[in-house]
Length: 458
Image (cartoon, rainbow, N blue to C red):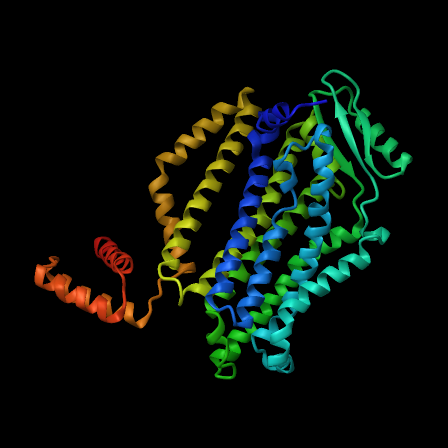
């Protein structure tokens, strides 16, 4: 049986794309914690606001949806099967409950954001109870369907390989001996194992795929709801919209998520077409541990890359939701979210560029690390222009917004800075202005730094 050390070393090997899947697993866990923390901030920002409660619950559900492969952060090997028995409930029960709950909450958007054609849903009584009835209904639906054959993962087996030997199977759970034998025979057809590994293969009920693939389509419907509500507000028919969340941020969050999820769907379709049939996690295992040609290796990278899109979509959506909710209550949230966005995107580009460079160089000279290092260094050389582009993009997504008091201080500071010098007398006046408007030293410093940065750019 493999050890935890062997598991992690293997996960970061060149054959496993230098730990790309493991990085996604760790990132999805961070995104879950990020969403939970943001949900708490949204709730506390207006604890009695039903819209904030609704958004908090939705953020938690979205965070859970990002964590399908989070169990692989732990040693995913037979030696720790007891741990996987526990995490399996998260992977299936909690994950699909969150999916169902999120779908229901998307359909509840007209309750919290008025749409003319669905104005009958925009009632205080619905707002008061909808935010907790939706998750209760999601949990109930999952409990009712989880044992239905179309939604039930009935069998799972470990595929065990020792380099140079035939692969074997070791049942994890289930009773279908014929299914397990078909899996073992399928792996034996590829010949002796080219590496030592342990992985799992499970049945894949069509109902679970339907829930996972149907979620982006319902997100698209939610996007239309938000767009319709914005139009109603712009036409003067929806005065309540601006009181709850900033329409632009909310819309951009949904739009970004929907675009990334539709790309994910398109990528899955493309991979299936090239593969000649529906791709499953069995294919992934064969591409990873078999003796793949260049096309199969490319399919393996595309499959793993597709796993990044859902967490990335949810992280972007969460960031924009938080900006929409907290921009008027938490000073500096604009700058902090822009820095988070820029750092995350640049880091992601670096990881993907390293792996792509390694794969291309591996196919040319048989030594992939050289390509990864070359691409990584090249990315560092052009770091500044890339960061400038990302910063401009983040400024379009998350424009700076200030309270009337902050704008008044900025006007006073701009007047004092006309000669580019702040005298002692001017500083006393600025301190008096800040004190009058209740702005502390931290806020004053950020406002002045923001103005000075803009002045330097000009």
